[in-house]
Each structure stands twice: as C-alpha cells, then as structure tokens.
Image (cartoon, rainbow, N blue to C red; front, side):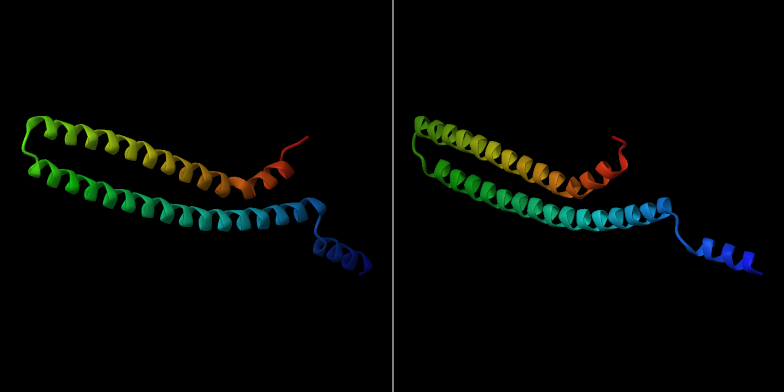
Length: 124
C-alpha cells in the first residue's frame, strides 16, 4: 500500500523539464499576443500614411492641373510641368522612406519578445 502512494505522489510532481516547457509555452503565447498587437498598430500606421500620401498627391496633382490650364505660353507650361515632376518625385521618395521606416520599426518591435525566448532555448 505504501508503494502505491509513493508512486502516485511521484506522478503528481512535475519534472524540471516539464516545468521549463510550461514556462516556455507561456512565454511564447505572451510574445505572440504582444506581436499581434504590434503588427495591428503598425498596419494601421502604414495604412494612415498611405491614405495621407494619396490625398496629398491628388491635391498636388489637381493644383498643378489648374496651373497648367491657366498658363498662356508653352514655356510656362513646361516650367509648371517640370516643377510638378520634381516635387512629385521628392514627395514619393520621402513617402517611400517613411513607409520603409514604419515597416522596419514594426518588424523590430514585433520580434523583440522572441529574442528572450530564443536566448533561453538556444544552447550556449
């Protein structure tokens, strides 16, 4: 009878490896939830930036078209067109740079919680 009780208590105790697995599992779930939140916020920021750029670009194009329709000479029309091309390109490069930064920051922040997990799992 004593043997059976002793065995049943051994079964109830968790082994250190199982405890480590449980904590790793909890850490992984927490990291995943944090990453989902970061990706959601990052995606919203990116969508907002794209919408704002589209609005600015449309307004700039409309203003340029108004200027083109009001010019009287070909030289002035070429000047307006070249100025538009220059500012449109600069605006696009600035927009692409900002989007790149948003994507990089989102990726860094989303994977930051996993750095600790990888450090604990990886043998030294």
